[in-house]
Image (cartoon, rainbow, N blue to C red; front, side):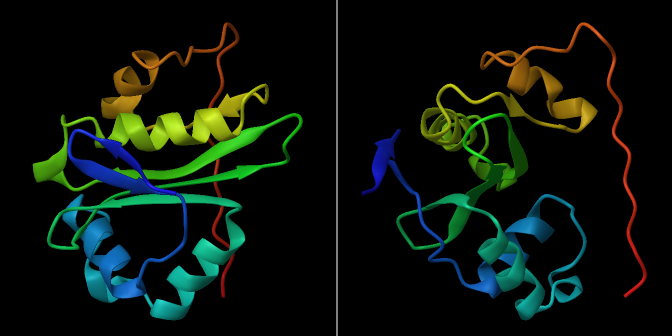
Length: 141
């Protein structure tokens, strides 16, 4: 059932077309739409147990969040994306709040970009007392 925030409905489902997700990712500077193959985006969405999104009145995808959770010890925010012209309207906050509500009692971790760290801190997240770092690897296909 969709929740309404500031005139936008948040949907906790995976009813998102790959092309619209690629367009949203490109809108925030995460490459070009052509960088995203539809099957890759569908595989990503299928892997996440938690996916939510927001569309505007015209049906354009304006926000998206994903999370992995084991339901007991950890939840990891995957992506939290809001189209630039729709930022600062409560959409990102509502998408994040949905994940927090669905994972009540389970620690939630995020690895935000440095320029979005304050967004998470303002919504109840904390920087760890012991410094953490992000490491990554992309295996060759």
